Length: 241
Image (tube, rainbow, N blue to C red; front, side):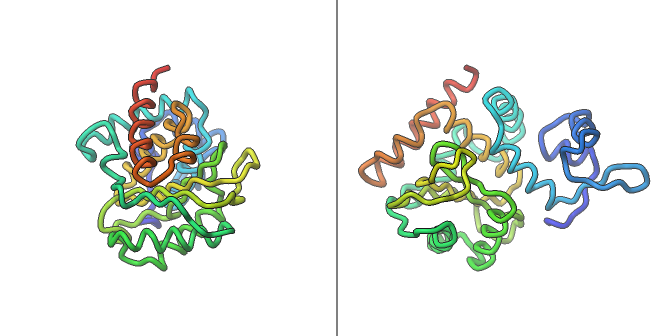
């Protein structure tokens, strides 16, 4: 429920942080909240947006630490340590997005997501993707973006999945390095804990493996899929480097 209000302890549990960590964020004004009766109150929709933006911007050491916490917290949601085989099927890998703008890429991704049969309302998905990008672009340095809904509502998806797509041309997607984007990972999770953990995993893969060049250079979808799995394995082996 995106409009739910949360206490400090609930936010700490949701974000895989200690309550004192959240208290520090509140004191520094780094996490959206409001005061009520002298206590901080958090709106779920604001925490969701803040958390995903924060994860996408984490550098190597804090990302490693956050990824370790989310791994421990999501063991019951995923059968093994690897997420890519659980979330990505070979048919979810697309080699030739034809969109020329951020808006057209989002429309194409929403259509492809609907084709999986796991999206209950493709128009709502598209609107939520657009709202998330308007709030803050999901582009990462190096040519990868991770579009995802602004709000996490269980009814939007029949199951969690990750769509991996490559565009035929460079797309201006608001990456912090100012470079264009050609790889898009559309993340669709029913469970918010899995959503945050997968965001951290994708960022870890981008930092700890040759994810972007291998997927860009792959000659076909099957090779892209196998390279994706190999990059996750390498990232997990190097996660403590």
